[in-house]
Image (cartoon, rainbow, N blue to C red; front, side, top):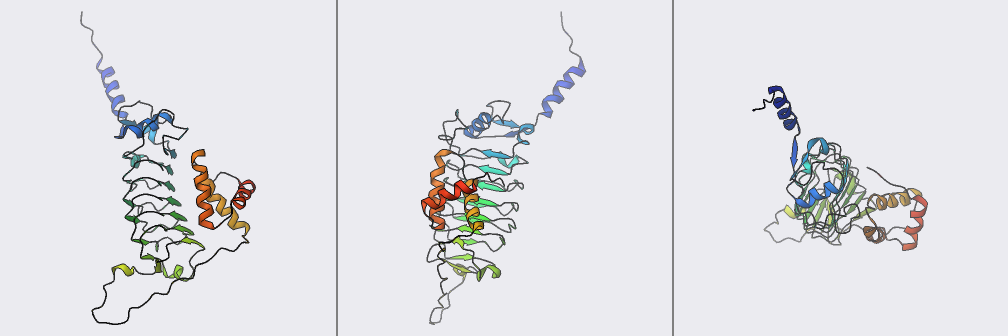
Length: 293
């Protein structure tokens, strides 16, 4: 005896399946992270439901080997494809993986990015004009494009392979670490040229200018070379203001992602601001609070 299935029932099932739109997640490690974080509700199948992705605001997928939030992930992430379709993503922590590229051109809501200790060669953030904080230390960066980022306050790009850097479109930039690169000129706005912030750090041979001197053609005639005067090195004074102390601790707390990374951040801040270990410890106790961007 044949059983007839009502047409409307079939139509309902078809529409329900169609309505479950998905985002492709090609990297197994990334999807395993999303499952461990209770974000991916439809299992390990190479995609995530759009209805799941839209609720993701903060995403911590740091080194899965040491990340206590990811007990069932045992390999590092290589590919972040799919995250660009998370419509409300504001904070992305993905340091300590094997990521080679990041496309955030569609992630217009993102304000915080920590992708340090990966293998990224090019990072284009020119479309992310809500960014406040970027840490991309210890990659293979040959190109870092910041563009016009009116809200950007902190950029950490040390120990890469950069040969130039343009921060002229970042009027609020107060913290910059571009040391450990091969940069000839850091391009700044004319307003910043004579008022370089105290917390900007670069290599000794790097200069600040309003144009990139590396692209200027040398003249053929034999004339004495024009020597760009070096900026005097600003040595932080021992007496720090309350505002400065709180700013240092704010940067410390915004990067505290797990216990394994805690000491590295302390050491980095001690080096960056020429502090003593007991100074930062006392400040942590006094100003300790969680910072969210």
